[in-house]
Length: 108
Image (cartoon, rainbow, N blue to C red; front, side, top):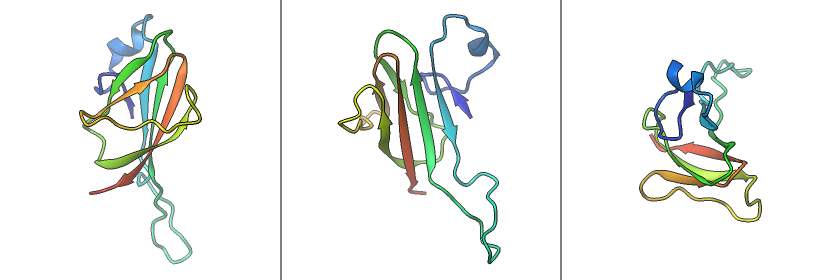
């Protein structure tokens, strides 16, 4: 699923906007799983990829349509030495011209 920095689904208007420089991509680790040797579904963690192609930092609101997870920073190209953290208001700051990859451990 694709989202705007405001946490809303990307619609045709957002895709057609030539000034759009940022988006979020949600990868559902439980979507259409392959079975293991015993027929059980192989599930993975969820990932949320926040892409900022703008020259200034951007604050992303995490999408509410995404199943609730505890997010941890896996990759932060703006600052690889420190892990970013989700703010209590459900937002993330993403540095200029950078990508932030969050891994979600499902809580529900």
